Length: 640
Image 1: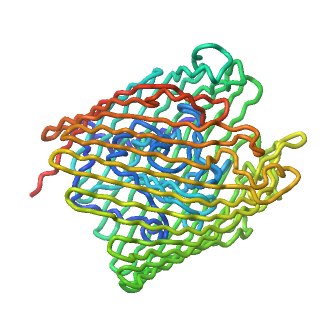
Image 2: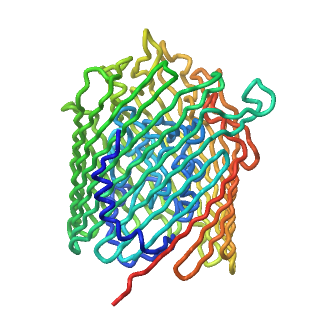
Image 3: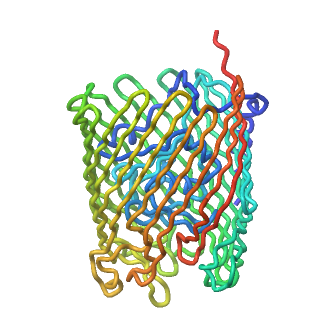
């Protein structure tokens, strides 16, 4: 499927003048006038939730990597990775890939076909802000936000002037990435175009313990190439009215390598993604209105050695309106409506034409005191005119002392069967029920010290979740079929530790994140009795990562070390993956002039040459190198 030509023509005309103007991007840009109104969901409806933003310095240091690599090294989210540039999905607090909502500027991007999204296809450099929201939030984002949500945002920086960036990244195994951006912002207009292209041979070597052959073996048939564009325009029409338009196009073509159980592979997959979004905001003194609409299109073609070919085109049209009223300084009310239409064009679907989903949602926030805030939100959805489980959440934040904050929430949750579950020709079932359950979370944030020399903090979160009617695909005759078999309980504890020491031209930072997650089946049946009480597959019980970063003037050195415990690959625990530890190190230098910054980075991934697999029979690369150089120009607007 070709990208719509008229969209490229439109954005080419809109942003043409900026191509010839020199500018610079800086993570320390001072926003003179920022007309962005934070999404009502995130700002007003998240009392009691743990939300972990990825800081701008980390985003800049990882802007040539994909979203799966960013999260694997900088959060406690477990990433199920099939290999470089291959499928990467999440396991949020013991949930499956379809239990994570990936939200882009307020739109849930999870596929209507399989309920998930491949994080390896999302370049980090396209996003201005990445946040991880832990816990069930289906009352905010709808079906599927059971384990947590990944929030991706593009922001408008009015009055920021001209900014132009260009960079290259070169790495082991034939990897090359090229990227650039042009941005312009005055008092009423902000425009941005970001482009990227990448290519990789991925012919890495893996250790002999993964094969019967002696010595190392080279990965074959794993080439990948991709390119994309993200363009946006924001207009401050009047002081209280803002309109923005976003277009995101991506193309990916990758060969799928053989597993260790295969001698060769000729399989490949192509993905073409188009996203077009329109967003209008009115923000008054007492009330605000948001209207947003988006067209999301996912086109894929899969070929497997002549044994089976699949292709499909999934389109979604989303329209949503919200109204927010500031009743008084201590109370706010938000009401909203969502209408979503899903279409799939695939020969692998039976008796499917169109799915229509409607939702009503509401939220109320109360500030009891300057230290105590609480919120309640609720959502009711209908799928093809049939009511799905009602969901709500109640949360609260309380500043006990100046440096101690407590938070907690209770959520009802659900996930409706995706279209593959319902209509897949080879086994889908329209008799499936929606998954449903509840989640409880308690947390605390403690600021130990904060002064000119020292900063130290710690956070602890406890959670408990129960999901009924968990959908599982099981072998049958003649096809695998989905059934509501499992009743899954997940519970655990997450900790976050941060320390920063500053003196003269030096800074030394330390961060440490841990997660203990026990996620197991509590319902026996003939098909899954061997899994009763056992940890779910591909949900490690222990994970953690630690980082040390040293700054000196224009230099910075970052060392990151992660640990993943035993990971079971069969429900009866008869097979598992050994624990592994992976370390990455990166040295950076920035050269600054009046209107120019040059960033250079040299990194080594898998520093200690660890032999490991995240997915059974899919070995990961040994030690690898990468080098990048980026040029950032900036030209401020002249003030009258």
